[in-house]
Amino acid sequence: VGAGPIGLLTASYFARRGYNVEVFERRPHPALRIVPSGPDHPVVLSSRALLAFKELGMHMSFAAPDANPHKGTFDMASGGRLAPANPGHPYRGTVVTSKHRLEAEILQEMRQKYPTLIKVTYGAELVTADFDARKAIVSMQEGSQGSSLHVQGCRSRGPGNVLLASATRPSGDPAATVEELVPYDLLIGADGADSIVRERMVQAKVRQLHTQRPMRELEQFAEVSQLPLQHASTAASATGEGNFPTSSPSAGSDDTTASEPPAPTSSSINDSSEGTSSSQASSSSSSSSSLTLQLQPQLPVDVHSHGVGEYLYEWRRQGAPTVQLWMSEPGKLSGVVQGILSWDAASLSSALSSAYSTTLPKQWLDMIVQQASSAAAAGRLGRYGATVQSTQYHGPRVLLVGDAAHAMTGDLRQGLNCGIEGVRMLNIVVRASQDNLDKVPMTMSQVRGEDAQCMQQLEAFQRSLRGNVAFGDPLFRIASALGSLIWRSALLVVAGLRKFWPTRFPEDYVQQQVMDARMGYSEILKIMVRFAVVPVIALLGAVAAGLRIAAANGKIAM
Image: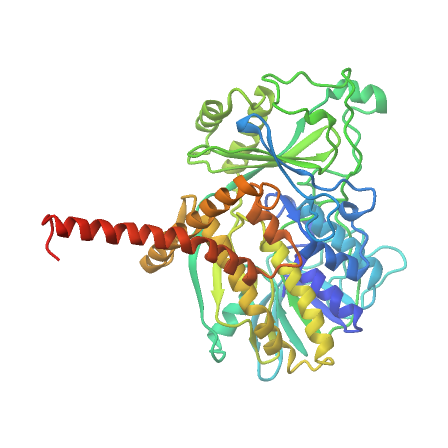
């Protein structure tokens, strides 16, 4: 149930093994959306995720041999200090793309590789499921049954919308819906943190399944795009057009989304990650002075010489809004602004100016204010999500993957990477079980559960360093405070070790560990907890010694 990156990759793995896969997605077809389904934002994909595209033989633009690797993140508010990444490293290398662009490229590759095995129906939502009889009821727009979205040479195979290069609206009343009974062999919920599949499992009282939401993100973010590094008029003279040459539309565009294949069905899948866009440009921006826009104040680093996706640029200070940008196409930067208390233009401009007046160009600041305040007024702000913990990820012939199984906050950028790594593991489980679909859900839940829960804990520790979090229970708030103490103690030890082994313990030590496909999340958590033991014991010992001294002096009664 869902057609975001996790759901589409899961469908691709099953199709590669010869299964007929049917995907139901609650959002409308991307080409039919009047506005994007949600704000776009940059995502950093590590080797945990990139291995999936290699295994599936998907030719993604950001992973192409000539694509720019991610080289690091500049702290623009602190003079352009670089936290380097590991470009070219087989296990720690990363790439940067956007959420919409990622989904669009997966759609395109899936259509080409599995045109008869995967069928996607948009505008369809799971209503309920009989897990014993293995039948689901799906609600969809009236007229969508049998109305194919097609181009020449393609046709609909059974009910539902076949997603291809162009689309036509289903016939019938857009407000009217019909329900269809869909039998399945395996039901997979990849429909995000607010998973309907998980909700139906809880309602059906699936044995030993319990869920909780210990933490919810309060901060919202707005997409910003097309911040220029070049003069449009100058670029136009070189291309004969009125704007910069690009190899793809902007991240917010939905009308050039890749199409989808038809197919019969036995396995049902559902995910609701956001959006679509187009393939990523990989060429570097021009450094010619005749093309350079004179930004004031000047940037602390020479962004003009960088290529598409090579770096992230962050303006971050305690108590101030955060701006994160990346070069999404030659000469243009896109990204997000978050941590805003008031989204009206005057308040946003004041907050950004007071924090970054010497490092954030005025031209960009004005564009960020205009775009972010407009997005807020239109109700198009995003939120990175919540932590959702489940005691298990399975039921009878039903399985949760991605955020539906283990949603987490995004401070360590592992939500999507963890989800895709889980899909890769699911493929291994299916192969090892010799396609016994009765065993697959429980086995997957057992082999993946501990590691995913440890990653949730790592994310929660990192998130505890900042505010603007809502807790589901006072006990979770206490646990978060204790977690913050443990995490700060571990980071203190890492900082101390850095003085003796700077290459072994860089500033982004934790980030590099979680990006490393060779490291299990549970192993990383154990390492960090061990680091925290010494300072925590020292602190408790100092408190105990202080109490004893005070008692000895007769200041308190023991």
